[in-house]
Length: 147
Length: 105
Image (cartoon, rainbow over all chains, first blue to last red; front, side):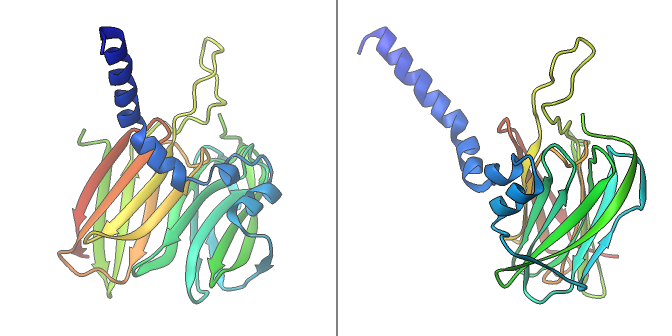
């Protein structure tokens, strides 16, 4: 093996090693859903083709957000066998914010802080026993927070 | 590195509440800097929490999570003294892990 061939081989081996964690991640991260520019496609990407309303989801978020860069959202599901909670904002450039998947004794409850570009409907989608349920709330945003 | 991530796990009435604060820019890839150049996307994509080595929460995130992300989750399966580990990995392949031991509230 000459020097150039060895260098090429070594470089590609190194690149592969560096890319390994990204590859592992790419298998898990739902690119199609997260990059969807509208709610319908984002839901489809999540596999939520049919979503029904539910009164057994508690969504706590402010009525008015002064700063759209930090909006605290709390979601708790009282639906039996809740597997996942997704958070979406209708009017964000990419509506899907997060998808939380629970296992091994985790309660279907999360609190996080999200960005909102403008006044919009906020939706929490619950997956339970393979079915999808949702609750939504309109949040008025004084100053948009999507840079 | 001490301030890159903070975690606290406290148990009350059998429920363990875990609070995590991560230091991360969470760039959307749409923001422009002072020189009118687009700042490349740089955001956490995956957060994994384990309790004594078993996965309890897997969070997939997009660019809509706020800068310096905050997260609370709850476990009913944890005991005082159990170890909780939280790891994040971002779109550049950077990653960070932090541990906490469950304490009584």
